[in-house]
Image (cartoon, rainbow over all chains, first blue to last red):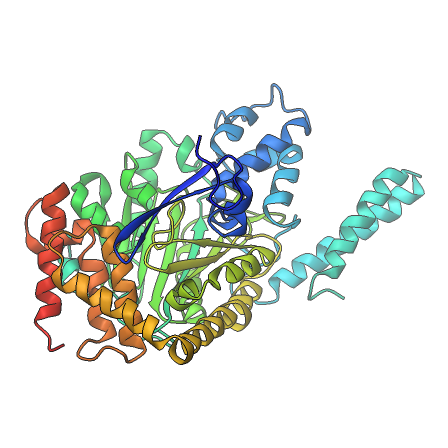
Length: 169
Length: 353
């Protein structure tokens, strides 16, 4: 086995670089390849990132037996392909998808951009967010009244996230 | 117009006309959209796919206004022509190797293209020379609104525009800026740029997008997340912060090379000219590598008698499918390398040194 050119650990990355037309071979271990910029997280195609997230998601909400009536999609199939089968899948697999989307989208869980109903209204997204905030606040009040503190804590966190985004009062 | 005819023109994005085109090759805005009444492409039956295709194509070709679109049915297009569309960045690799009913609408100046039945029902792209993200967005937004008047998009209040892959959900907006960063590479500073990019959650890829290495010092910088931020926020971050920062770093690296290592710089450029003017066999990778240094020399005014427009054209014309269409014959392996070297010698020799 080839050793890393920099630190003598076993090399896992093998490169041929053409410099001035002369090929040179380079062997690096994972760590050195990362440090020298040959391996980049950013170079991984997005679908691979998603796949990694999906692997990590194994322990999440049970999806056994869940299947979309409309398109036939199962959670397993989604995990294999990274693609959903129809728009209903976003509802059917909502519990499972939540974590996946959060990780893939830097923690974001809600759309705050252009809206289908009023695509030319630049404030539509802000209005949408405001309406959502009002809904969450009502839910929170109700949860507290019912003494469902676990649910209340969740709602409080969601409200915090929404409040911290720009354009809300 | 047919794909083969495109090789006679340069395409808007390679025209070297946009702001900062010496470093920012092109700006691209892509929107992913799906129709609510059909399954996503991967779960659509053949009849559904054909129906989708017909619906989207008819809608695109009957748009009011001056869109000037022509349509290519990819299922009935030969491979070398499909490849030409990939090399011109008008369709994705995935779209050319796909199967079944699918196509693309392209504007005559190639600034706009709309893929039908790729991963999503509709993938619209606006691609322009230089730093023009906001202009690209304006066009894409307008087209999107016009299409929406007649097509019922898959949308939810919570997740926004629904896409086959959840990494595109929300705005469905991917902005990409392609930059030529040879000086950052030569000074070894490119790693720093990458590290900074990681912090701001960008994807950086090579010349031909997902899954390829950066050859010829061309890097495509894109947003990773599409949810939780508005289109304007994404565009502002790119136009006002991310791209200017990288641009400044490249300019600084260039002036450092010029002042502190002029001999090494001219040596690189001179070697590139030497190889490109004299080689008898040239691979695609080698060509990109040396053209990149030649381009740096031209932009920095250290090579005379050549302009950026000519170099940009060479990048495209020496790609495998373009080379074959321009020369009018099928080429493989060694014969393609030889033809590429001949072509290059002829193009570079014809001008005064």
